[in-house]
Each structure stands twice: as C-alpha cells, then as structure tokens.
Length: 466
RNA sequence: GGCGGCAUAGCCAAGUGGUAAGGCAGAGGACUGCAAAUCCUUUACCCCCGGUUCGAAUCCGGGUGCCGCCUCCA
Image (cartoon, rainbow, N blue to C red; front, top):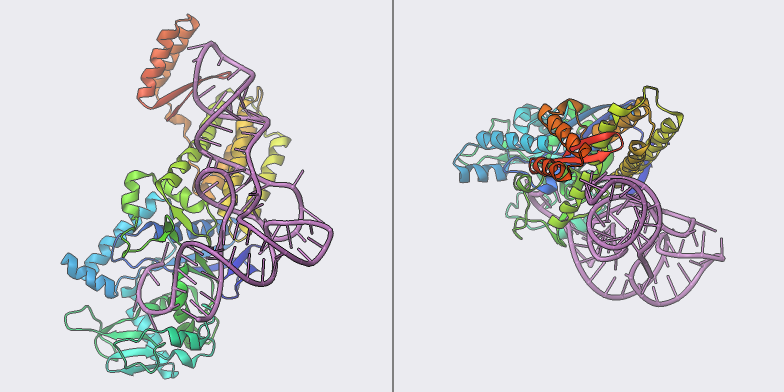
C-alpha cells in the first residue's frame, strides 16, 4: 500500500507517487532569519524532518532542501534596530537557528541555500519571465503579471474575483493589478542592494524559492511544504512564476502544517504571545518540545500550554524507563537468538507503525505504536527467561523506529555504568543481606540525591538516572 | 463578503459506516523488607437538533461555539 498524502492542491488524499520511482525531491520553506525562531516555526521543521526520515526509511533517495531567507524588509528593519549590517544579522540568526534545531533533533537538510547567494539565479528567472511577457518593469521594480496565468488562485482555492476584491489597496499603484507581486524591488538609498538590469535593488520574497528549488531539485518537485499560512500568497506565487518560467508543473504534492495556538488564540506578535524556541529551551528539553510537536496530526492545530508539555514529560519517562530496564535485563539474559514470538510481535509493530505513517503521516498514531512497543518491552523484561537475541531485537526496533525515524527515543549506553555507583550498590546489597535495612535505605537515599534511582528486581539491582 | 478548518473522558489526542486507539493524571489489585518499575482492572450521554442507513463520532441538512487564510505571517 502506498503512502497516502493530503495534497493541498487537490484538497484530497492521494497515493504518493514521485516523479521518479525511488527518488524524492523535497523542498521546505525555511525561516526568514531576522530573529530567533518560535515554536510555530519549529513545528514545520520538526515535522518535515520526520517525513524526510520516514521517506528515507521507505527506500526513497530523498534530496531535502530548505532555504534561508536572508534578505527582506524585516531583515533590513532588524539590522537598523541592532545597528548591524543585514548579512551580520542573518549570520547571527542562522547560527541561532541551527542551535535551536540541533536541540530539537532536527537533521541538517542536504542543502540550505541562502537567497543572497542566488541573486544571479533569481535575476535569470526574472529576465526569463519578462521575456515571456509574464513580468514587467516599472521604474526599477519588476512585477509578476498574476492574471496572465489561467490557474492563479488554484492552490488557495480562491476565484480571481475574490482575490481581487480582497486585495489590499497598496500605496504602490504602479502595478497593473493589485494581485501582481514584486519579483525585484528597487533599493532605497542606503539599503542593501545588488546590481541588476533594472538598477540597484533586491529580490522579492517569492522568487527565491522558485529559483533555488529549480537549481537544486529541477523543474518539478515531488513535495513542497511549509506552514499553512504560506499557501497564499507565497506558494500561489511560487507556482505562478515557476510554471510560467519552466512550462512544467512546479510541485506534485503540497503539504501544509497547522498552527500552534496559545490557548485558543493565534500566536502573534501583536498579541505578544509568541513563544520562542530559544526561551522554551530553558524550561523544557529539546526532546520534550519535539515530542509535543509530533503528538498531534500535523494538519491539526496544537494548543500550546505548559500543562501540555508537562504531560509529555510523563510519557517520555515511561519510554526511557522501559529502554533502561531493557538494557539492564540484557546482562542476565540467556544466550540465544530472538524467539519466533518476539519476531512476530516486531513484525506486527512494524506493520502498525508503517500503517500510521502511510496514513497521511500520522505521527500521533505512530507514537501510540511506540507505546505498544514499550508495553511489549516491559513484558519481555519481566519474563523469568528471555534470550539476549530477543532483547536485542526489541532494542533494535525501539532504536530504529522510535529513535532513527521519530527522533524521540534515546538509547542508553551500558558502558555508562560508573564504578562508584556499582560500589554503592554492592555495599547496599551486603546491608540487605544482613537485613540492615536502614543502612540499605540510607544508601538508596544518598544515591537518589545524586539523581540515581535504585530498583530491586529478580535479576539484581538496576539503576537509572531520574 | 469569499475560501477553509475544528468541537471525542479531569487533561492531551487518534479514529471518514460495524460494539470509542494511545498517553498523562486518578482509583483498586498483584509483586516488594519498604519502595521503585512493571503487570492486571477501572474512568466517554463522541457540542446540540433533525435526516439517510440494518447500523453514524464517522455521511447529509440545520443550529451553537471556536479558529485560520484572503499580499511578505510557520
């Protein structure tokens, strides 16, 4: 059964069939690096990181591209406020972006192209659009002629009349139609600018994705993704200009993720309720945040609250405990291969996991399969007799699906066992043997203060970090 | 005004026709020197009113409430 994806373009769930059978060209709109990213940005990057990992697991050769918008009005504004140049501001927030993403376990894209490093490609695109009659220059600005293309509005499902009616009246009345958008903007004095056939200026926002996507992925992408608000106008405009430019479909599947609300309100600057990842990282671990972001279906809104994330902590503890106990059980296991029962259970878990992810990337259900795996792990660990092979197979499953694909499970390294703790444990065992329970409890309490939890099991004492 | 989404237990959250997943929190039990962990059991008038159907959280109609997009906001 093929992977089913909800495609914004058709507003239907469709079987996923890339242009080439075993290759996926995947483009995600990255951040505008004028500031630290917020939790809503992070949802995009974390979720599509999982999609990319899953597609790779499914055998596709994935080329994953995510851009940085490193020049635009907001960057210019920010550079004035910070008293730094635009490139300096961009560089600082790109570094910050990677720090935040590393903490959330998001892998680097194959390419992170920056707008300012592709000025030539954008100018080539603009020139081609002018030649084809899809763009026109007015006094140093270049605009795209939106109405020239018949299917403008298809992605956002808006009839042109409505778009026109809803369009804001802009100060700039040099455009032929209010729907036209800037491909090239003339520089004001002192602004960062590049030379061009139309005079000094900078690229408009939408053209960078079209130019960079084509350069790194070709004329037609398999998947183009981003936040739901990008649907209009950004993605609509990308489609228009790219297809006018290349004469080919721009992207086969458009994926848009839902927003994060603060309570029931939209998170927005004007409401002053924006949660930056940078700040959240002081309150929560990156793993808690990642788990939180994957705990609901990607197209549904998530309500952010401290209570919600605190609940995640309990869930993570359950998984970590199982993983640690599994590791501990290994030392007292019998030699031997994985049992047929275990193999069968793991096959079923794999089927369920794939079923969840194939069903429009349902990470919430994939996580519930992870909990089934945890439950089975706990049963195995509690058995009187279990083979090392069975435990290793279980461990491998958790590592692969929970760790490699979802990025939520962290394995423990048995070599972590520290001699000092082992000595204490030995001492406590002696005390218990002598029925000196107060001494035994004292040692346990002492270790507890260091964050080490001791647990008595039929296979001996095990310990883990709290 | 146009387009679209959502409403499921104390909380979070799956579920697009066949007796309501999973997690957190709570309760009871088993196990334990005491614990911890684990296992078992337990917690739902699926927003309201109609309709279709043998059968609806799921489809249709009408309400109510909330939310998003409609030019640079993930």
